[in-house]
Length: 286
Image (cartoon, rainbow, N blue to C red; front, side, top):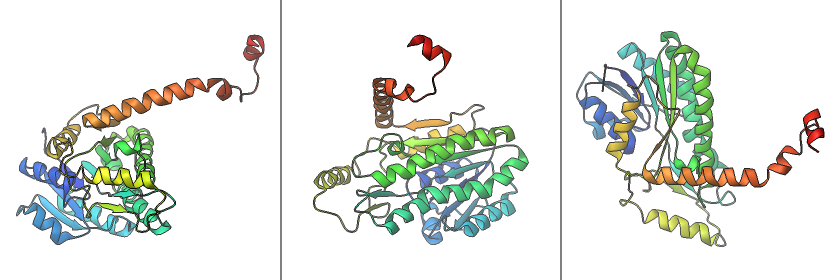
């Protein structure tokens, strides 16, 4: 795993977050980990070590995030790797999901990530080093029927990561966005997935897709321990990727999306380029 680092991980009481924390502590790394429920986090990790700092944090609250970052600096004197893992799934058509349901999703999946980056960046910038790893989803690249809001939130995480990588590189800070496929975590349980409270009967295909996904629980192809190990390995790379897919299903979906986009863009190229002001070259060509 290389030299010892200080890690700050959100959403650490279950799933990939918990796998990350356990693997890092086992390797002797220093870990600050967040959860809304600190008792749940302590019980899940069960680590009596000076290298573990459990933190109760509301990621949608900027002050709560700021206090957590300061507490991490106070204990470990620096932060080397930030992993924005916290998030949850939300299913339903846009019409079915209320404004509150939608905003709550963005509060955790997007604004929570932004709050952590905003509050950690001054320290990373000052020390001229660090790595921010944001966990998105293959849904942010290739969304599926019935998951519009989730796809939108994870697309936002991908976009903000891409630009942050450019913004922060002059300070020696790296940014990677990870897009996992289906992993055998608690993601498809009621603890991590919200479906529209007021479904509309006419959306039969949406209901069918949700039913199909829920039946996958416990059968997902992805191994969360392998995913955690892959994410941890990024921190030791001198030139890590900006984008990292995890899982064969993610690779297949992303590849199909790229092919689909290229085909569609080329099919409509004539209209696309027809909107430019005419130049000497286009006049000659015509």
